[in-house]
Image 1: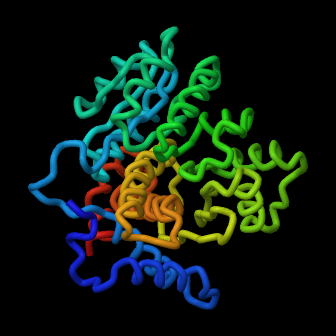
Image 2 (image 1 turned 60 degrees about the vertical axis):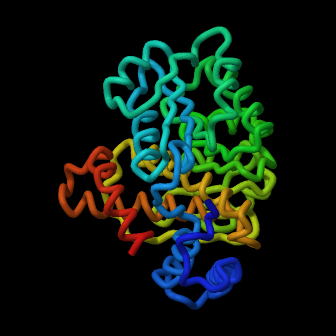
Length: 333
């Protein structure tokens, strides 16, 4: 089924999407709300319509690499978020002592207790042809597992699938930038501290905190123009050419796990964006940037809706429960 089906209102969807995206990037005087709406139009166009003609797995088989004895919540949050955004299957590749715990959180996830096995790379590699995208880092830890993960990333790049790197995966990228440097289907999602470490590791000098837009562009260029998302009061997204700011309203609540919701949903949107690109639906637009913006907007909307109900007691579990309605409000209204 063509990804162009389901959008009869667009006489020329490719031209419409490209022009909207270019207009967004060029209108410095437009309000942030208006600019957000413009890019959201592009995100809406990559979402595959729901139809009974589809088969299981067609809308996304997502892999999450992470989860160890101390950190079992993060890979669960990323994996279940991917499912709730619209992926059909969600795989978690974790250590043996984390597997039973993660399985107990939800029967929806496919859990592989292989990350700490001697042949971990081979065990994960055999699944790569079945995956549409990979999220690396949630609950990974910073021990010897990172060395195996670096090899998995190399194998994934050879398969040409989108790779979202978050959390402890960013620690790996700081130590070994070459593991993802220049891979155009790679997306980095650092918070301020993670961004600072990455920036200083590549530039060997302190970051200029007076101009975040310039700094995030510099980091993207140094990393070979891969997409970088600097999370913060406004999420700054760039592939080294232009900076897009996602200012969808969230809340003041910053509980642990929100970044996992972001990375899991980004993995799904990256698959959809590159599928739309391959179908000729979006041109002159970086699919990674489109996916990153969509995931940032969705995470913020979930945060806002959960906060309206729970206030100070809001947790990431509350936010995940909002994915369905937030998705509908942003992308299907």
